[in-house]
Image (cartoon, rainbow, N blue to C red; front, top):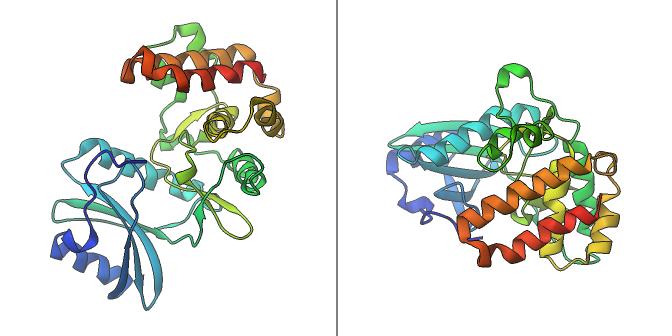
Length: 265
């Protein structure tokens, strides 16, 4: 996944900002730049005598990226055990940085027959138990699609589960015995099956055959009980949005994967 903005390396960050980080972590002895991700301008693994910290951030002038980071910080207390703990948040010298517990793992392999698929299913199942309090004011998933769906279709996408909504394999970290769902930058409240649907599309993208994806999704009660009309609205909204972004022809491969969900409910 290519970052949407050029990646700024640790040593290129303002010196006062790096000093503010080291006041929290201790002196940095090793640095590893993380190349993946769209919602941050810097992403780095920092090693100190106290251990490792994953640091991500964006310039304060990037309103979209900073808004995503604010949401990630806001929901972090509710997703502990699903994703890593946020240790600190720093705004200094024109930047905002978040420091997380470092997950010693690798990105999930979603290809056919992968041993990671049950681990991914388990973390998604755990994530479905997460509820954010009403005063957290997390956006409604249905509200994303007001340009593409009518009122009746939007109502089908209402729900109270705290959704991740971007279960790309780079956001699924796997260790020896479990998976983590990281980068909660686009949370929403909606039906529990939504993250299953997004992950199913990623499995198809990784060349899993539809029948195997159907069996994988059938592990989730929320999916097997999903209203087919709601899934159809979800598919329609995503396809229309993608066509708007990249055009009808370029959207066809992705839209075909979304449309395959209609055969799985």
